[in-house]
Length: 247
Image (cartoon, one colour):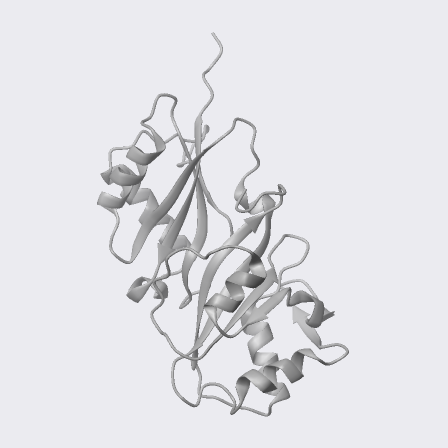
C-alpha cells in the first residue's frame, strides 16, 4: 500500500525580546518542545535516531531579532488545517516567539533553505551616538563609491567581494523602503526604534552578505568607532527563488 504524502508547511515567525539571545540550536529545540506541547502530529525521520522533520530558512545570529524568518515543518497526513495548526502552536509558544503566517506547501517542494534568495533588514541605533553624524548623507556617499571591497572570511577560506552591488535596496524610513521593494512589510515587533538603515541583501547558498558586514564597513569608511553592540539587527522579510515573493 502506497504511503500517504506528508503534510508540509512553511511558517513565518517572530523572535524578539530576551529570546533573541538564544542560539539557533536552542531555538530549534524550543520549537520542537512547543510542537509536542501543542499535541500536533509531527512527522519524524526514519533510522536509529528519528527527529522531527523541521528546517529553518537561515540561522539568525545571536542577539538579532526577526519578523520575517521561516521554518518548514512536516506533519503526518490528516493533521488539521493550517490555521488550526498555527493557533495550537501559538498557544504553546510565547509572546516573544510566535507564528505570524502559515502555508501548506505542495508535495515535492524544496525546503526554504535551498530556495532562499534575498532578505531585508532594519539596523537600528541603540544609542544616540551609535551612528555617525549625518549618517544618512554619509551612507549615500559610502554607496556612491565605485566599489566597496572587503575580505569575506569563511571557515575554510577567505576572498575579496564587492559590497556595493550586494546592497539591492536601501532606505532610512520604512515607508520609503516599502515603496522600493513594492510591498508592505509584516507587522514589526522590534526591540529598538529610532534612527535606522533599511537594507535588502542577497541571502543564498551562492551569495550571502550579512547586514553587519555592510554596517561595520560603513563605520570604517566614516572612521566611526561606536561602542560594542551599539546597533540592533532586525530581519524584516525573506524572499525565495520561485518568481513569487516568499515562495
